[in-house]
Image (cartoon, rainbow over all chains, first blue to last red; front, side, top):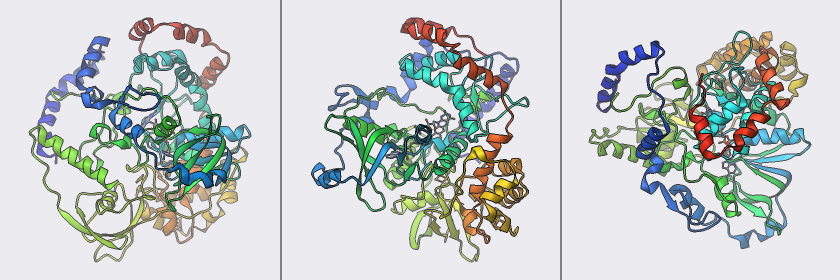
Length: 359
Length: 248
Ligand SMILES: Cc1cc2nc3c(=O)[nH]c(=O)nc-3n(C[C@H](O)[C@H](O)[C@H](O)COP(=O)(O)OP(=O)(O)OC[C@H]3O[C@@H](n4cnc5c(N)ncnc54)[C@H](O)[C@@H]3O)c2cc1C
Ligand code: SF4
Ligand code: SF4
Ligand code: FES
């Protein structure tokens, strides 16, 4: 059933299977954990980011002179779709006005909108495709939150900081890890159905790089469950949240003080440019897997092309960490129609063993 | 987009030949009719890839490209077969003679509600989706569902007010709306499904005491000290701490 070019690999997998099974059963580690030097060695030899063409110097803008991922550099250096002269009239007469413009209707965007209305603000979501056509819909395995008595938010903090090679912004990691448990509760109050144990406690598994079990889940559909719940809640407030689908933002607008004052949207159906004047603007446009970095297949949705980064850069924002890309380590290569399909990390959490080309 | 897709495949083929492995065999081609236009496409393509291969651009009708989002509902007929078939464009393979059309959007009126005022029972279904009670148990929705769900059965659960079963049977619904388009009673099954799931998550879940405790600990600032300490460490000390951390 497998093509010839996979047969050798399969044979190697079979050869080492019984030994690995024995180790796994005996509770001994199948692979001893790597130390810092060993990690560095493997990464520098094999990580796609370490190839020389993976990065290039950017020639313009706030990060000028830095080495960024090549595909990102190319986009940041590209020309705008807009001719400012031809926009003058519509800038004087904006098509939409809103308290808060949210660019991107994925998980972060919908959550921002729901939070805004709780605080009496009426937001507008402008999104590229349909609401919820986003990477958020696709996450499978689970999300991390320190909810068990064995674990703690500070343990989560240490794991996350270490996973980020100690480069992360500490305040952000603290917010992520400290808010986690409360977010789990808020989501279930919106109707998210977490996987639970008999006694009602949350079922947790190991995720990539976790020292303690803290991955909560909704079977293999965490993203779809959260995203559909958030979308449904957004749609329960038609008078407070206005949603514009198929109207991606293409450029941010700055006022005379240089502060963000909205954005220009591009209506994919009519091919018109639409001006939004906003008191505040939030960018939630997600990642950029669809740029097919280094020619890789991607697990990302159709619209994940890093637009928010480009817009923000043109408006003067300094970008962080644009020299590295997260490659999900496990994916399908066969059969053809699911090549690039993500194999969730939960598979490893549940005991799946990754093997190298030597089995 | 079709260009990208093509490159992706080219790259992959190249990677194979570079490593001395045999080239993948040339794909056989089939003729399909894409929204009325005949096109010659590789026989191993999904409907989505076939549309892009033919040079048509997809604006609506593609989201996740992996069978999660339901953006790509498609109807098609096959030669010598009177039936209308339904599928997701991103996971359904083309066949010789297939005549297909994507459904750009499914018009419907979602019930607007405040979850906090609802009860997880049949009264809520009656109030928000009375149309459910028009179900004639014909099974068309179940036949139409690309996820292979027992759609008719979950609508029957809704009619009985069995919210747990409604949640269970509709868990893997991607919201493509193909069932709703085929239903002779004009029910919007996928919207009933998400209502059922939210009612379950909000009202029928088992409560986690551990979570209550953890949330209280955070609110009482019990971790402030540990955070302050960790955040004051320099890179080296932090790294040392990280590699010596206890594991479960
Ligand atoms: C297959 C897959 C599996 C994953 N599994 C997990 C997992 O198990 N656990 C985990 O924690 N994380 C997982 N992730 C990562 C996680 O899903 C994302 O990090 C997260 O959902 C990002 O949310 P977001 O709202 O920032 O972006 P998104 O959900 O991608 O939303 C961005 C939105 O912005 C829109 N947009 C883009 N450009 C524009 C524009 N110019 N104008 C307007 N709108 C625009 C997009 O259409 C989209 O709707 C996974 C990701 C993928 C792809
Ligand atoms: S139940 Fe209906 S909307 Fe849900 S996946 Fe099946 S056909 Fe699509
Ligand atoms: S198609 Fe409509 S009427 Fe027929 S079983 Fe399904 S819900 Fe009932
Ligand atoms: S594109 Fe998302 S289900 Fe097909």
